Length: 423
Length: 94
Image (tube, rainbow over all chains, first blue to last red; front, side, top):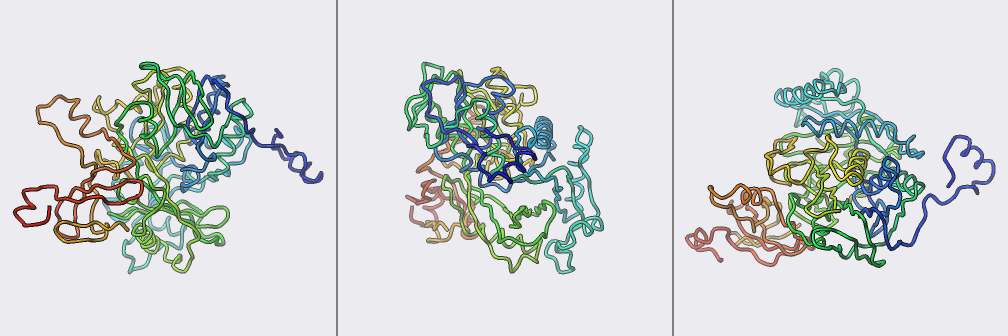
């Protein structure tokens, strides 16, 4: 495989672009792997990459029922941030952000990580107080990237928000997290796939898992649409369909419900918005950024009822359009290019699981709610560490399936045990 | 839009209703073992297919109903009042 470098781009440019090689192989599944990861999304591919890179486990397969990056990896709004306040979450997401900062170099693949600031709009004195409390918590616990902006500062940075006297939700200020930003989601998928493949990982697409094989309390392999595969260890990273794989392993019940989340992109525009802007007020929820192609990428709330269907409902399209108009009225005549929906694991406290399971050799990565994209590098790192060493790293000590039994909920919103409320 | 036949009001758009959650969950007695409460509050079967759910007709009669719905196709198989006694007192179809 050809390494990307300035010299290589130049050389290929003057020699007809014929020296590039395939980015990753398309291997037939082998009968046995030391580790099989189910799910060729961001977390599955990252896990395989870090297993090979950090732990020297190279006899690894990633199984994907469709094509890699075709699920939620290709359906998110690509926001990366680490403004969390709960112990465990803040360390985890700060680790993730630090890995994002080096990711393009690490993978030798430009993931187009753009640290353009994450600006949360504040619309009431209570919202300013709550944001100040959260951002002070961040500063006191080691994440100094947390600022509260006055209205004047905000107007200077983002001049075209709705500051009008007749605004439905007048803006009072903003909470700003400057190292946050966006990345090119497909590039992250391809970068991890290419880097993992280079270390010997087999990426097997069009391979649907149809059964999980057990010997008593131990997982031994899988039945797939491409034959039986024996596995030393098995990791599941199949957000949206976690409960279905869980059932295949002969178990039932998880602290997870599958819900669907929509996202939208407009026609490409000239540069308009240089930050990620987030609006949350009462029942409304809206987040927007501009992609490098110029499309306005935005989203809002869940569809409000449990669902496995990868299609969004129209009332949410209306809600999101209303929120867009209340924040950025200049979008009023912009045409929507596409909208889509992904099935997400909503967990009981809004925090994920990177966990051992009741079965030996079976490990679970699930429950990412709205936030799986930004977690990718840390999720891969800590899930690989869990699989390789069969014990959780201290950072993910409370990210296990049994935390509720110990009385622990990592509930950033304080919304309580109702999955649909953890937006 | 999902159309839900409310037993009290007739068929309405789902946007008039609020989705409650898994209707098969029953809470144990207050003095039940902690594990029973843990399971009732935190553990879900998360069925892909037909499941019973609670919905509330918040922008209508405000009654809670039990809806048998397919979570993949969104097809509704049956709807009944969550509190049968209340329905009987009000003379609604159950």
